[in-house]
Amino acid sequence: DQQVKQNSPSLSVQEGRISILNCDYTNSMFDYFLWYKKYPAEGPTFLISISSIKDKNEDGRFTVFLNKSAKHLSLHIVPSQPGDSAVYFCAASPNTGNQFYFGTGTSLTVIP
Amino acid sequence: NAGVTQTPKFRVLKTGQSMTLLCAQDMNHEYMYWYRQDPGMGLRLIHYSVGEGTTAKGEVPDGYNVSRLKKQNFLLGLESAAPSQTSVYFCASSYPLMVLYGYTFGSGTRLTVV
Image: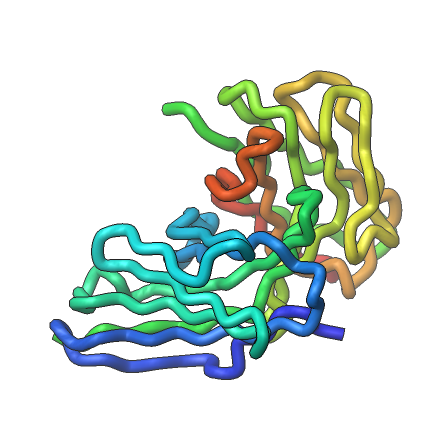
């Protein structure tokens, strides 16, 4: 059973606007949450993370929000750029940190 | 360039054949992982290692074996390949206790079993 879910397989956004990617999880024991970005024929690259003791983490144009009561996290990209077009995966782990569960990914297209 | 290198990048196997996928990292990471990516399934952990000489099962370990004889290398073996093992395989590595810095992934091995 999928413990981490990304219910939107794809998203299209105009350049300069906000992109919001969503992720839901079912395991209340998850403590660490990461977002990865993946281009075709490449491995995923780490983007941003958050631990369960925080509800927001910001890094430049990227912000991750965590709502523990709803078991939901989101990634905001502002402003979106064409180079942001990629597949985004969220991942979650319990406090051991050595076994991350990945969502199925959301393909983001930023239209110039 | 420092990073995670996977060998080979592509491979076609016949059902029942065996093969070994090699992962090498030069970042002195303690932890190493093997994931597989399938359409609609995301990345699923096969096996992982928290140090030289140690291995542990992940979500989908059946049909695979691993070895970590040297800190920098993590091998994934398929003893008798099956069409269900057609997938893209990713190796990753990380430092312990630096979970929030994420993993470094290799570029993947695309395996087709016919």
